[in-house]
Length: 50
Image (cartoon, rainbow, N blue to C red; front, side, top):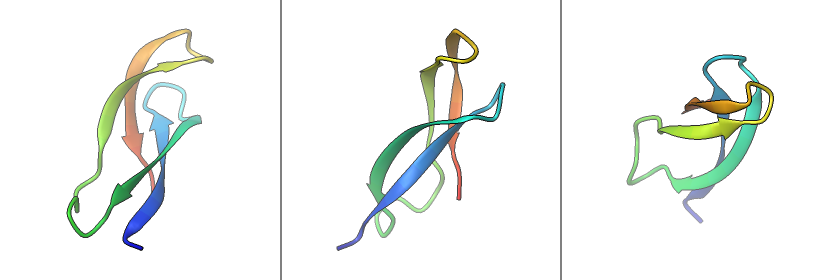
């Protein structure tokens, strides 16, 4: 199965808050989303980690 689990990290506090999955054969670059960080108490950019 080509779907793999990925983890998102807050760019402000560096905590790993969110998990998702993606097809690494179709999407080769890293994802970046604006998500709510419960430690920063605001929406911050979250980037995919290794």
